[in-house]
Length: 328
Image (cartoon, rainbow, N blue to C red):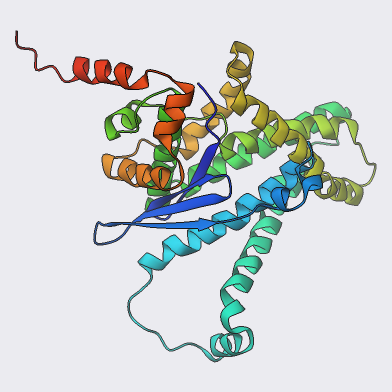
């Protein structure tokens, strides 16, 4: 495996792929056609060099991914809005009058802030309260930190299991799988074709799901050391330490994504296993959408020429061996 630098995420009936400041969103519209949008986003870590320093960049890279992800998600949703025009309420009309063209960006910001607060409440504070029920039986702070971490992971798995029962989420997880498959296909020196992508793995070491698992594991180590006496101070510590935990977790994920040693692969396995919950096998139409997104922002032929010299001949041999009809 050789690092390509591209990454992305699944959106509604589509894929967003990013290569440096360029990103493309490809969506399979209701009429079956693939619509592709290419745009430019300069990350916070590129705007200010200090934000790109190790252990700091992870916090702002996470924020960048949320901003760009919401933009991509909003654009993909626009193809599936109800065609019937509804009369806006007085409140909606007032918001449109006051905010005008800024309405969409303001609403996006509100949704992001609300989602972040909910995530902190469910995955950081709630496990603390549940673990606290056992404090009368457990005196060791170390054991309490491990118990809290285990509860946090169980809540996350239960949440993913619950939302994955929704049909739209199932399809999003399939598109997530096609995103990983495209990247794995290229980073293993294969031509970007539907057949090669289909045969590639749907798990990838740089996935956000792996990042979340790393965050949960690192949080256990942090809270073994940070041991506030009062409940309110413990709650505050869970919130205040999020940037530090995210920064460390990002560096570990970044290192794993750029190295292919036996040790790194072993340590990455829990995250790869967790991706079994958030990625599903895509169909060929989904793979076509992912390929369209990749080709819009990434010159994969040039990448293969540089990283895998002679890839064309190897792919020709693979194609020939796989296309035989069995006759002699």
